[in-house]
Image (cartoon, rainbow, N blue to C red; front, side, top):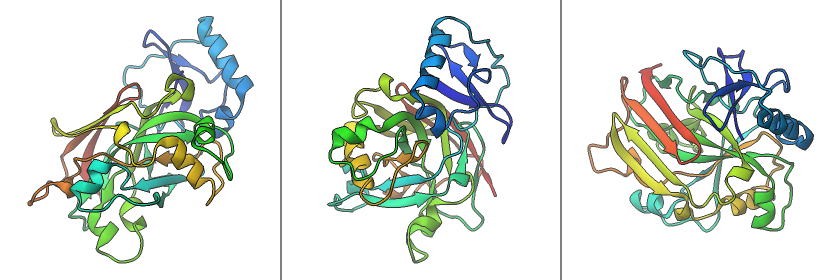
Length: 285
């Protein structure tokens, strides 16, 4: 299923995109698309049955804002340097273990919302990423297969990053990852049953119509199931938590000088097969 949340900021309601591309209202069945829904097999079954029976009312999608497809996110866990190509382009060795950082849920915006370039920024960068949404509580998992079994769905993400804040201002990466609007998600949450193998997906990104990233999840150093397994030994992962699993080659930081970091007025589009497409205009904060 393709689940989403539509409406004004802070007042989004749950919806479903059916097989014919028609937007359907879920608010009569569930209160939100969140961890509680993903963890409730009976609720998901009711949604599937209602969709199959044609019982869900249609919504007029014209002019309707799409918000983040997952609400009430507990935490966002980022994985750094997780593609061989990206590590090579920035001159880094492939890490022996996943590099982990955290993003605040209040950085999340909808797939087509405006993204703000922070005041004082000179190195705001793009990162097309596969987002993983946890569907059941994961702690101390034993295998990558168990890791995949705890995934509730997948989302498209842009892990926007300010590189100077990230690496030139001391401390951890968090300063470059947590500026407002820095985590566009969506348009949909695709339930895990529709993506049996997350390592076979094309990941693409354009800036002002020029393709910058053209990667594939098979290039990940640590596959999705292994990432979930690994993280479960350092933190408990709860339904609705999001993991952004790294970006392929093609970021601005990996380009020759002068590096084409983002400026106000730039438009970024992101796409992963099966997960839809985003479009963000960048403006000054």
